Length: 279
View 1 (spheres, rainbow, N blue to C red):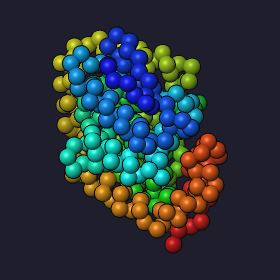
View 2: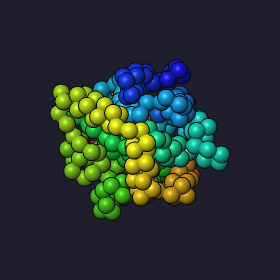
View 3: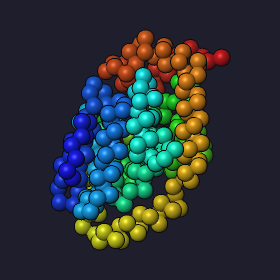
């Protein structure tokens, strides 16, 4: 790996690349993060790229809490550079992440909500700290459906009823419940998480590359949503995120400390339930 990134610290250990996100103050997904992710995905297509990537966060409280709601046009423009012609959306960029021949693992501590959860869902496997991981899809509580893959992935992984519960309640799910529902592969004691993920990553990386690529492609062919479905979700999100309802509800959250390191972000599921009922 020869690229340098503003929001990702990388460390190569044999055939495993560790990629740690760091975008203070709370790791929001903004244009800088998306720009770096586009570059990283390009680097993973180069000869000699790592066989396995392990993604984690430098912030133990926030993996990716959600997108930066003040910079939707900016991060969307950056996503267009990686998603392909006419595909200006995080959903299509994350689909590209799913399709990369590299095996992708998420080591989850802190909050992964909204597009943060959708990033994790786009990766191949998710392993979470039992004591310190939270997942959620807050979009409906703010006023729009998820637009970067959650509808497609959660419906496949959780089944209809549980997917609707996750999406329509906009509630926070701890790691144990997320594991039981199928949102993540495993919830592990925090003290065991690093060693387990490292062992899993290096075990996979030791196997023949052609076999890894072929097996992942075969599973993708069965489980990944069609591009048109991803594009439709993204278009609906981008339409509704500009609505008066979203602006009002997001404005109420900003007044309470949204996108800052405080109780609203730490307990966003509860904060959404406390908002005034929508018309």
